[in-house]
Length: 164
Image: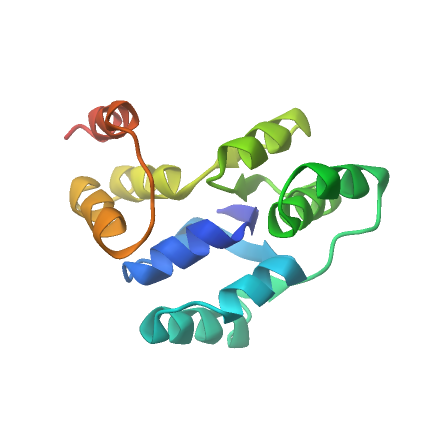
């Protein structure tokens, strides 16, 4: 297990489908910046919000601000504040992984030298490690309960990687 920083959408989406625990099982530390914490506080689903609040209260999701660096200031000009803070924080903490779904944020995180995964990567790792039995029902739940966008090509690639 390793340390990770997450953006809003993976935490939100996994909480929506009742799978927030997968993040706890895969990372011994999960950090979020204040902008992400604020976005999560506005989660529309009361059950998901309660799970997120419990994770923060129990301190397995920890909140800390990124340093005010040239990288962070540049990121704020290019992406949403939550993504900019998450990338900046992951760089500051020298995190093993950043968990981010948005394409532009993923690209900038990779350019910053970070190992990037997202909600689908979390589900694939969970399947490979036996934490879930199948990825397809989880993807179907994401589509049904969240605004998770997944092209049919990417879905086919993920399911093939999962052996489904």
